[in-house]
Length: 116
Picture 1: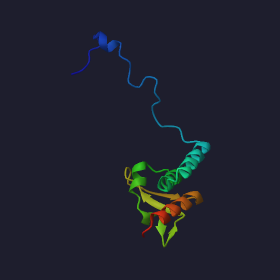
Picture 2 (picture 1 turned 135 degrees about the vertical axis):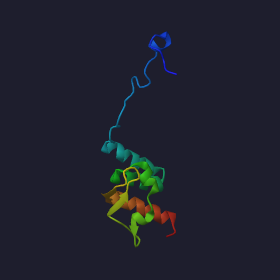
Picture 3 (picture 1 turned 90 degrees about the vertical axis):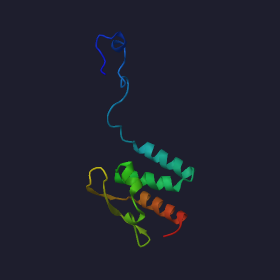
Picture 4 (picture 1 turned 180 degrees about the vertical axis):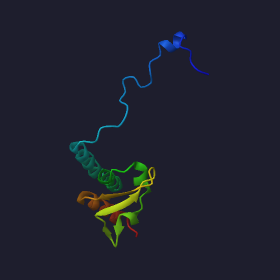
């Protein structure tokens, strides 16, 4: 059942997206990235720091980062400098480079986590 344009209740109703930003969000500024990293280090959240650094370097969607396996990033006890991941939404492979802060945080998390 639709709404009638002659209904006085409909005429006075505000749109749901009034005064809201619609569309893509702004990218984080470098100062904000470093503030998040500092907070995660202070709280000793190694896994979250590794995931955050991986997200920043790869620019992948959250669902792709969560589905990533350790074998995609680590070979022979060393974190790879480049990795390839197939995106879930598009099905296309994406190659990205892991910078030194990301590799260090991933390695620190894996050492704390233990196992193979």
